[in-house]
Image (cartoon, rainbow, N blue to C red):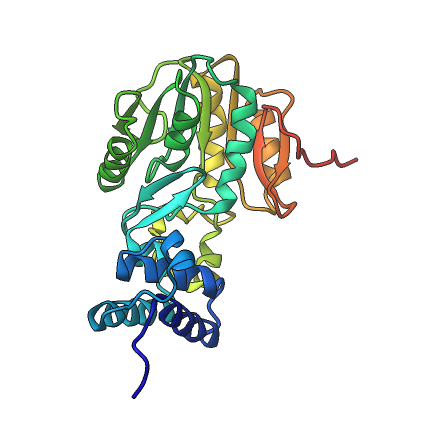
Length: 293
């Protein structure tokens, strides 16, 4: 007679299946799926590892693991994803936020000290990840998120309400900056679509099959959005304001040139934690890429 399953044995079994299926981060994914299937917390798993798991909970966990083995992202299975210091609801209508995008926060937060009042805009806000992460860190700030997708904006509004930020975050359905006044924001951020159209089919299934194509496709060379954004960001940004846009790691010089052509000075390429080009900005950053000669 086999022993009754526990949090520990269920975690190890799920982890083994994910590892065998060559899933990245099998231990973390197995823990997150176990927490969702059983209602246990990370602390519970560590401090009470021999807690019994019911047959129903085990069946739910097996179903979650089956989905992950089919390369459905854990965030899609759970309907939520952590970003920076906040937890966001995610649906098939929004990009699942990624750690790479947190490099924007590394640029923005040093530029706006805590307690400083400022107004920001997040262009193509999706789930509201960047906007809400900044507002959560800077209680004197207010912000606007724009998106062309009504479904995405509904997700962002729900996330703002869940985080208690609905009083400082507004959302508008519009194409980037259309209809917005000149020189009206102290900070402009964006994670626009930047994958070249022909490269989308080569992406990992977690991205290719589960993120909205609208949030990925940057046109033939991946730079279509930046060609629109550079002059528009220049228009809506206040004098002395800061902008920061996420880029694909090979696009730094090309995007930098587009913003310089739009009239920005002191444009720099900053790096993510993997030392890859990730953000183009006119703001400060300790991980600025070296200037190429």
